[in-house]
Image (cartoon, rainbow, N blue to C red; front, side, top):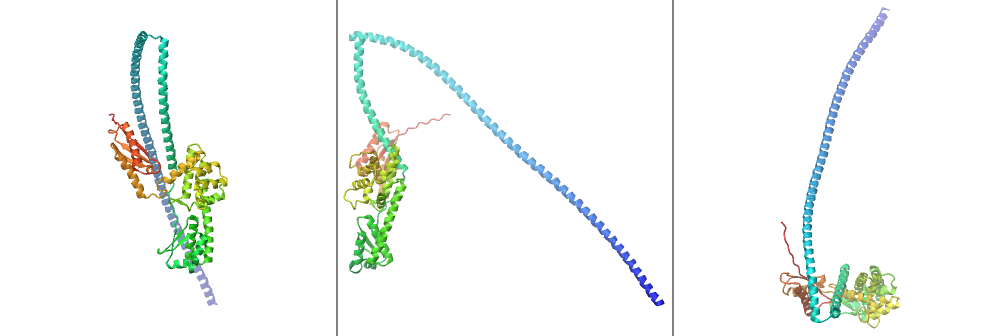
Length: 521
């Protein structure tokens, strides 16, 4: 029993000690927590105070920077206003100087006017005195004439009027001849200006397209295949195309010959296709030639349509469009007849507009003027008559038909469009580059023009312009007067006529300039 009690007591004591100990520990921990919390609160307060100080300093800095920026902007605006004020002051000074200068000029002019008025008054007074003296002298002379001639006033007046009438008749005739010549020269000059302006407005590239009649072959062995066994291939080809195939000793070339350019082109392309295909026999020849003929027809039809659209000539008959396309393969002195017709159409249209006629009708006449060349291999006669018949059959108007018939001056001109077409036709055919004038020949002709003009005494320089259609001659004004300059112009033109051969006309312009220069100080 005492042992059990002791055990209970020890347990109670231990529990009490443990409670006391845990209470002490808890109080100690609570004290430590409070101390840590206080230190942390102090640290937070210190950090807050530091942040507030930093923010205050940053705000002060930003305020200072903003004030500095605003001050700099104000300074810039102030400088700008000052610059503007200075510019206005300079402008006002200049205007004031100008006004003062104008005032001085006005005063000078006033003095000049006053002096002129005084001189005029003096001259008027002098003229009045002279008129009085002249009237006295005329009266005295009239009395003397009456006494000497023995004629009355009426008889003398009648005789004087008769004499004056005869003189006036003679002078009026001279004036009529003079002004007739002057009008003729001005008309010719105006015609040249119209023609030159039209040519300058229409600047076309001149490409001289020539139809080739040679076909390249890969080897001479191909010649035997083209001929075929006993010549059957070449006979079939010539029969289908209507051309002659010439095979000679020339290496690598077969010649296609024919007067019709369309047939020759069909034959050339068909032969190229056969050589590329390699299968050359009568049936294949017939097939290839047929396909090529259709392709060429479509191509020429397209060329005719494009030509009519290019010059803005609507409403053409399909047959006329087809014939226009055939002109693409026709050449005249190596110039494509279709390109030539298009150029003539543009030139005729512009010439018609400049002289007050219908430009659209002029383009139509120019485009169709050489249509007969597309059928002159099939119909007998010259291409003007053939073209006129074709145009008449297909419903073209009388102006177009007459332009095609008379553009080579073979008939009496009835319509002005025929003259314009003939002019444009001559310009298109004769201007350099259109019909293969070589560069060397062209340069040589220009040098000949300048050399002939430079050989005359008093000529300083000579320049050929307008593709050799005009020559500008500069003469020395100290050596040559106006009369001599006119003579030089005539002599140079006469020398060209005697020494050179050229298409169209060459205008010779002699320039004589005299300059007088003084410096006012």
